[in-house]
Length: 249
Length: 249
Image 1 (cartoon, rainbow over the protein chains, first blue to last red):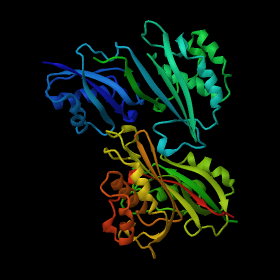
Image 2: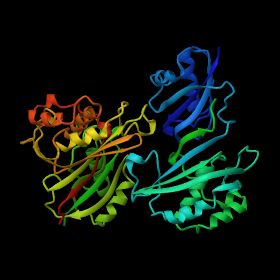
Image 3: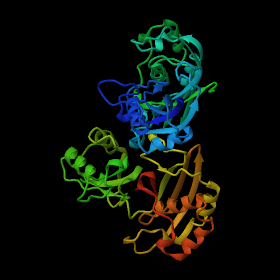
Image 4: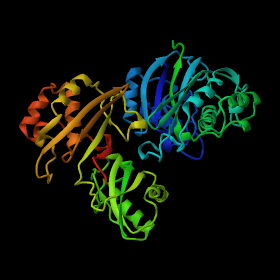
């Protein structure tokens, strides 16, 4: 009897060309497929929830696969972690319904965008933060972010080349945290367009620098034109923190 | 006229064989000497405050050197950061008195020992934390740490091979912070013996795991025997946060 297993996957994206298998470099999906296939002795193809870009990190991406294995589902994480490179870890493993699909189920994703706002880039955080040396006005960033919360057409915040049928999305929360030299943008939503969180981060950074007044974000949103928003902030500052599913049966 | 410059140096110790020049690998001191010599066109030899071990990180180590250069002292950090590898950064540069010596002046050093106390090691923090999967009792660790604060003979907490004249040291504070899956041991003192912070961390981890009761640390201290304390915790969890000098004239 085949069963479907859900993995919560954490990784340091520094050394990978993102999640999705591609010809030009090693990806998370490829390492998972290879490791699972070798370990279980069956041909395994995982289905990922979020196909994160090259250099993006995750603490809680989700992948599912089907297996004939009799290894208890919750023990798989321990076994797999002994086989994986140290920059990829399975944080949990559990059995889910055979029709559970990580992209087609309702879910809330939480992303974090980490900014090093010190005078010089901190070497210890350099791989996981985007360095912005000028002091950010986090109060202005909070005001700007408020325009983005809710259900909107986010065409201005979607990279060209996206195959999404609609650019309407619902953002549940955007929180801006600031502690000593670090500024953190936390975005929660039911789904994000291609590069959307990084374009939001790039735009909010421009607000924080005083380039855009906070209310300008309303105009960017209404323009429905990618050219109006800020730059796509660098991948290394982005972390997919977790994906919560409403119901896993 | 020669002047003495004090640098505050941050580094990711992962790729280095520690601070001090040695034959078997590249060190922070060596990279600083080479970069300063090339950039200033004078033979430069820095004097470091703390000769951190292989793999140890720093946000605020201190180095001084003498130069004939006329570059304004506070601008040197900007110039040097364009020449250094990205895992070493000069966080500030300033002129100090010609007799200022970073090791012989009174100072307070703050070290942090970072523990990943999650179920599986977080890939994004793996290079900067020591992973301890069993839940640590931080209240017990706090009680144990209290025995170490003050002026004591720390012979039990000093690696063999140390050339220190005395093993008496003053620890000003040891704080244990805990947030989600991270436990942080912060130690402040006027000077630490060789490996002392890592042996304190290894010992407090044993207390946190319930191997030692908190009061056992008093017995370890009184034994004045390195064999009685816990293991030296791994280098990668240690960060030299800063060094405060009482007076720089």
